[in-house]
Length: 224
Image 1 (tube, rainbow, N blue to C red):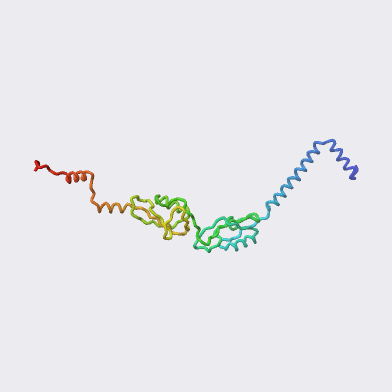
Image 2 (cartoon, rainbow, N blue to C red; image 1 turned 60 degrees about the vertical axis):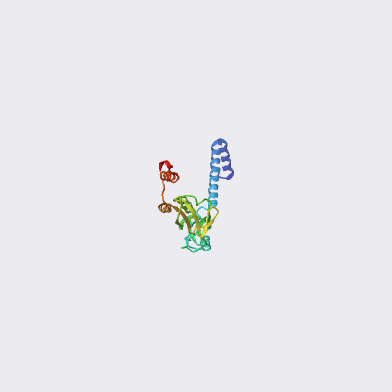
């Protein structure tokens, strides 16, 4: 049996002629194998497979410092929200996601919540006067305003908000106020009504008719 290249090629050619189906199946298997390996290599390259990073602790760091620490870990930073916390330094990171210690892909963005330098301001788009106290407080709280002071004022409509003030000025639809401000709601109370009623002479309809009759009736001379 010849082992020279020409002999081997001749035998392969003869085998391919005798078994074309088997040869085609082998070709298909080889092509599929090469394509699968190529796809896996591309996915590893595209998704940085095996190239992971651990999210460092950046809470309470300044934004610039947090950005530098993340960059050293192979990550980037993105501000997702801002709040105002009197207890924290302005411009510092309050929260981060993913959390510190999480294993993520290198190059991933870490979303942070930063403490604002001044309280956030909101605009009132819904009336807070001429509505019930529950409606007004519910709306203000939904805007993030928690410092709400209630002042009772005389009114014919109990529990109705008769007026609203912030920083010494009236507010309403279109007003722009800080979420850290104190909003004063002037709420109607019926206490003044009872006091007013006690100080007045209460006259019933029957008494009014009798009084009117006695004041206009004059007896005839024959009745005297």
